[in-house]
Image (cartoon, rainbow, N blue to C red):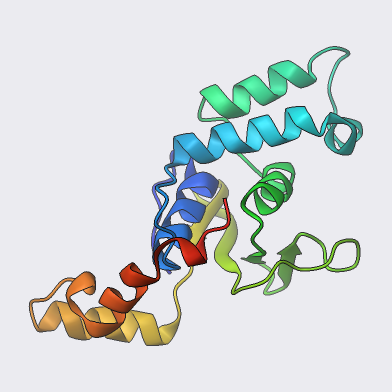
Length: 171
């Protein structure tokens, strides 16, 4: 697991980390992912509004809060980003279950490996939190490169991922 700061941006930062690790050459910061989620939700209001407990006419305010503040992101934002990025997102949950976005029972999966994040509840300041997940193979590769005094990009696999570039990023 890659520890992501528990600052309210963790969902977006974890996905940003995953996009970088999967060779997406287009930069995605937590800010650009927040904006993308809010825009996707606004453009597809009918898919989201009924599932949020909001007062009348406050859907736009909700989306603005997601875009402009460190408001916690969750399932709605995962759905929006999955479709915006055209990437599957795999959430390894605190109860050891796995949740996929988009839901494979309602939407065909996107091509390619999923972005993998972990969801924790009551572990980080007593609240909810997301981290980025890396494979044991990647963790060991990074540890070997670190011991050898090289950065990840200096390793053959790191150079290969960097060369893959935009093929790994659909948006």
